[in-house]
Length: 140
Image (cartoon, rainbow, N blue to C red; front, side):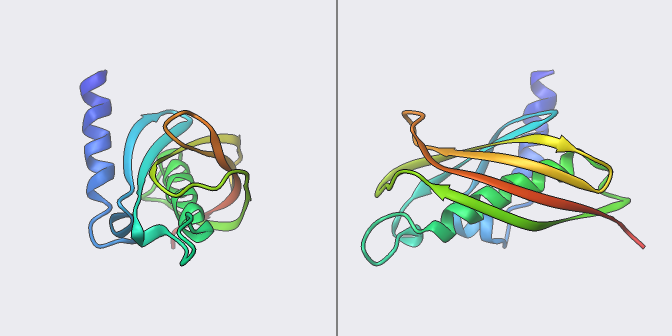
């Protein structure tokens, strides 16, 4: 089972090539049936001019794990997954370290998935709490 999970994580991380996820340094680190965890380093690329983590980088991290989690829970050959709504409550500011995004499916319908993403630091302090809705559209 562990080898299967490691192989899946390897394949998921290969998808990052030439994408925003690669630019931001996002790496998928844990996966399960209804959850996905990724990490992202905090560096100069993801900071505001004032030196604090940019909210847009946080949202990009959240959307990266949330959309992929929906994809893992659908038949990707038959459906496209698109985020139609995302919101974030930024609770704590941060200037350095590593962010962890833990996404879980709250509702898994035939056409909509509701995903909750907790963004935390290495001490498990919540930095942001995000909610996103993904739509599942049949491919034509």
